[in-house]
Image 1 (tube, rainbow, N blue to C red):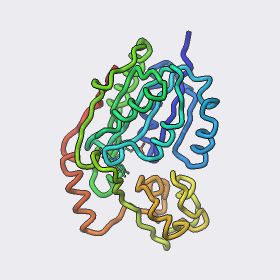
Image 2: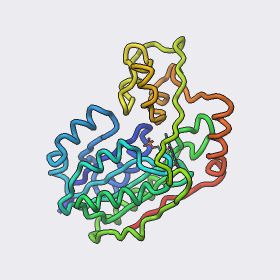
Image 3: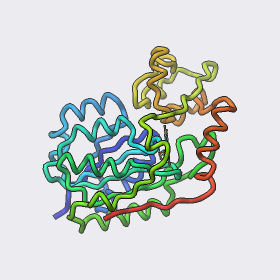
Amino acid sequence: MNKNVGIMCFSPTNTTRKICDAVALGMGSEDPIVLDMTLPDIRANIIADSSNAIKDIDHLIVGAPVYAGKLPLQAIDYLKNFSGTGKQCTAIVVYGNRDCGIALYNMVEMLSKNGFTVVAAGAFIGQHSYSDIVPVAVGRPDKSDIDKAVKFGARILSASKQLSLKDVPVQLDKASKSDKYPSLKPSYNEKQCVQCGKCAKACPVGILLPETGKYISQAAKKQCIGCMACVRSCKQKARVAKTNPIVKMVIYSILRQASKERKEPIIVI
Ligand SMILES: Cc1cc2nc3c(=O)[nH]c(=O)nc-3n(C[C@H](O)[C@H](O)[C@H](O)COP(=O)(O)O)c2cc1C
């Protein structure tokens, strides 16, 4: 019998979503049930009706990017709110070729605690969100990553055993040990802005005004998670990943090594 495959993911710049789609395809599902948790209103509605949202899904693929070696707070929010009652699932994180920190471990741990049977897990690589500053993993996931994700999906079909947490990779560093989420807030160039509202629609924390592209308030700027969804959505280059030379140096020092070597996906099954 074919499994009803579902995807639940947070993916501001779409790399996590691409990997989840490829894994679903490998599981034989071209048209999975998608619970896209990226936008705030949709995320809130799905969480409010969590048991109903996953009731028709036999196997849930859960995806999130890695932020500062951890899961983004938005992903933690939805992971907390879903109860698995034995349902099979696969945990996936996508990171920008630096490291995946404790994100995958925490995802498997949270899903297992909430009653999911986590049969597989994977850490894949996506273009680093800050590649406009320091190019890292540009164009990834590429064909090789997608092929690996599809093959991983095919293998998941015959997996049924709960993973042991000790098999899940952890790359502990300063960022993953801290509870902080340092982020780069994009610059806004009012002269370039045509008030199309695309940045506001793409913002996962809902802090931009559709009429102007500005922050709703000065306080809202502090809530910016630096995900670069608004930068990617803006064809006018009114929102750009631009920063002062000191911050640029810091980002460079963090990403220098990651920009030089190619990491490959790690899977556990
Ligand atoms: C605030 C922030 C922190 C990040 N921290 C890390 C990190 O610790 N390690 C890493 O390899 N990539 C890191 N990245 C890069 C993302 O994990 C990577 O670009 C991912 O592919 C983005 O997923 P998405 O396209 O689904 O949004 C970070 C990105 C952002 C925006």
